[in-house]
Length: 319
Image (cartoon, rainbow, N blue to C red; front, side, top):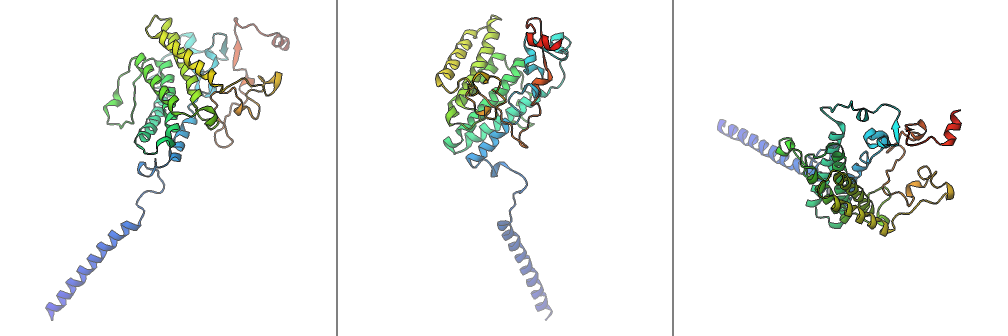
């Protein structure tokens, strides 16, 4: 009798453990083990819309806004105007900081572009994601151009890095090598992006990338020419060629919707974002992407210099 009870007890415990194992294994099949509050790579990058949403991130702050980007990117750099405050660069008192937000932000955007390009290269979505890959190439080139204008040669990072990767400590590449990478990315962008008539308003199109490439080549070609460096003529020829491509496309024309006052209403008309003169437009939307500098022009951010005589109406107004 004792033996029978023990045998039954062991059988009961064994059956309970077996049931517990089965229950745990079956629960895993029905429970969603993926975090609902986080987006992860295995669950993302599945559709063209995923790539579009990722590309939308570049339009947040990347495009130059003189008021947000600082003096170095504004009209204060012109030789016919100066800001309301003394500029440390022109005064020769500027001291290079140990860290710089322009550097950090540019490489942050470059990392995001690398991520988009990397995921797109491994995806099997074909032409559905081609425009967004083109935007990734464009904005990577855009941010490297920002860096080169300020620092010259900089490290070239073309993949998503982990903190342990040795490329984190890459040395500065030669300026010419960086420009080669910029032009290569812009060529990829031009090939991938849709033409203006097929592109969504506010997104980078083929002709915009061509116009930007012309600007990049003109900048660097001129810089090299007046320093007697090689490659100047080739870059200036590319600037001429891409500018002609934009002109020949007939994608843009002068804004004449307001007749003689068209120039006045170029940026303040309710439909100005769709005007045919704008090449790259940054959209501002209420409660989405807000511009707090709508009255910046009236604040007198720029003052005339001796090269720019004060107009008659301004002298009259000052009396």
